[in-house]
Length: 275
Ligand SMILES: [Zn+2]
Image (tube, rainbow, N blue to C red; front, side, top):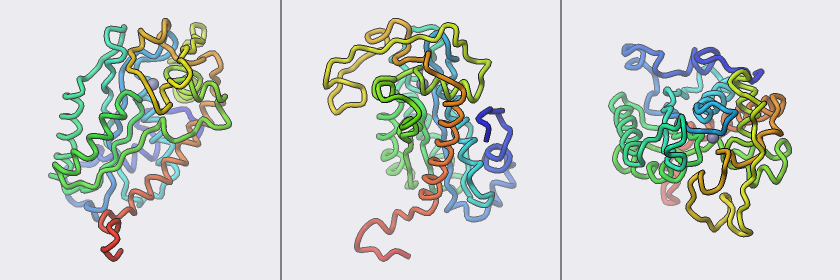
C-alpha cells in the first residue's frame, strides 16, 4: 500500500464493495447473517484554506482501502459507499460546508440499517471519520440495535491512536481539525488536492482543563476557536507521515474488523454458554 488512493481501485472495491454486486449476487451470498457490513460516514466541510472540503470522506475511503488490503478475500466483510455528508453544523455558513441536521443523519443511518436487514444482513459497523458525527453515531448504534435487532458496532478513524510516534504530542492534543494529521493523510492519498502554500498554523488557546479531548468541555463552533478554520499546525504535514498513518490505520482497522466479524453478542451474558 503506497498510500496513493484511486477511487474504486484495489481489493476493497473489487472484492468487498457490496454495491458492486448485482441483486442476484447479493441474494446468493453465503453466510449473509454472519457478514459484517461497514457503513462509512464522512463529511463535506471546510478544512481550512489548504484542504478539500471532502477531506473526511476521502480519509474514510483511504483508510478502508488500506484495511481491506490486509484482509483475506473470504473474510465476509463488506463496505457500502460512504455517506459523504455528516453533521457539520460547527462549520455552518463557511464556504463549501454542507451539513445534515442531526435529525436527518439519524434518519439516514436508520433507513440504511433497516434496508440491510431486508437483504438479510445482521451485523453493521458505523465507521466514522468526522469528529462532529461521533456522539450522534454512538447514540444511533443503540437506536439501530433496538429498531432492527442488528448487532451494531462503532469505530472512529480518529480513535485509532495512529498519531503516537508520528505526530508530535502538542499536535496530538490540540490538532483537532485540518492540522498535521489530516493534512499528512490527504497528502498521501491525493497530493494534488492539497495546497501547502496556504497551510495554516493556528493552535487554539484552550484554557487549562478544557481541551476537546479532555473530560470537561464547552460547546464551540469553529468561528469561536479559529480564524483560519484550522485547529492545529498544518505546516508540519508531509506525505511520508501520511503514508505511515494510512498504513497503520489499515493494520489497526483490519484487526478490529476481524474481531467484530467473530463477535457473538449472545456470548456476552455470563449465563449463556458460548458456542
Ligand atoms: Zn476532518
